[in-house]
Every structure is written in C-alpha cells, then in structure tokens.
Length: 114
Length: 112
Image (cartoon, rainbow over all chains, first blue to last red; front, side, top):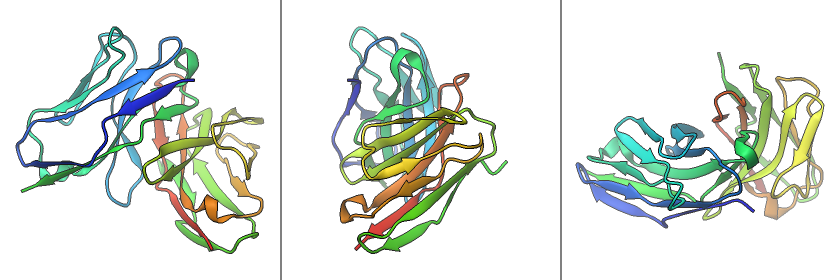
C-alpha cells in the first residue's frame, strides 16, 4: 500500500541555520503531497502542498518540490527561527489523488535554539 | 467559521467503558476522517467518510464505530475502551477540490 518515509528526528538547529527534512513516498497513481506542521499542544496545520510532478509548494519561507523521478518531497527552509520549533509531517493523498484520506510519515521534531 | 471542532479536549476512561468523541465542521466539506496519533507512529487513519451516509474503514478501525448522518457531524464511538486506545484523536475534514484536510484541535484520551 501507499507509504511515506521521512527522516527520523529529533532535529536540533541554531537560529538562522538551513533546514532540510527528507521525505520519500511509495504510491500507486499520482498522489498529492503535503507537509503539515504541529505546534506544541495543537492540531495539525497545512504548511504547503503540491498536486503534480515538478510543482513547488511554498509558505512562510518553507519550500518543497514534488520529484516524481525520485519519489521525494523534501522540506527546506533557508533560515529557521525559534518559532519554527514544531513537529513536521509529510503526507500523501489517497489513491488516484483523492483527498478523503491521507497517509502520514511518522513526523520529525524540530527544535530551534536562539 | 469555527472550522473543525472536537469535544471533549481531555477524557479519562476505565477499561470497558464506552464513549463518543464528537466532531463537527462548518465548511460544508464532503470528506471527514478520524486519525489517532501515537508517539513514534505518526497519524493513522481509523475511519473516514466521503459524504453523509457513507463511511469506510481506515488502517486501524478495530474497536471503533462511526456514522455520518449529516454533512457537519462525524462522531467516533469507542465500544469497550482498552488501554491500547490511549492516544490523541484528531478529526479532519476536506474537499476534493483542494486536496488538503483541515484538522481539529484533538482529544487526548487515557484509558486506565
């Protein structure tokens, strides 16, 4: 079945460092890909998405590019802030791109120190 | 818009008790889902619905029931609580037009 593998955490960085969180997927058809963020004690918020190959999703300085040839959707940010400390989840949509169910990676906890 | 709301925020049950976790959305989304979040496991899909009167099982459905009588509401019922159901439960809604799902704030359930 469909699956998502993302780099294990936790990840600890200093403020203004470069961030990469790797995400690869296995899926039938052509799924949509997502990054969600969960701040402490809260639910998940959509950070960015890409719905077809070579699309780049971006939001709040974060970017990820849908790479069909490497089945990857790595999250990057050029300069992290303390406020970016959270758990980040990579996810894909269901078969045939339907959004009625998502498959999640296990999450990567990011801590940014001042 | 309130978005996706869940009640209660916290709940403690004894083994064998039953309860219903409530979920409502006011965005007229056709899709609604329940996930559980456990440490190191990410989120796993319990049940989902693609419209009123239509539900289906996800990855971990055992011990849970759902029904969807209206577009707005999607309650999750625990039939006989077990310690393995200790988790944080998230409800989400979405639409096929935009692909993403919107999550509620979660219910933290402890079964002793």
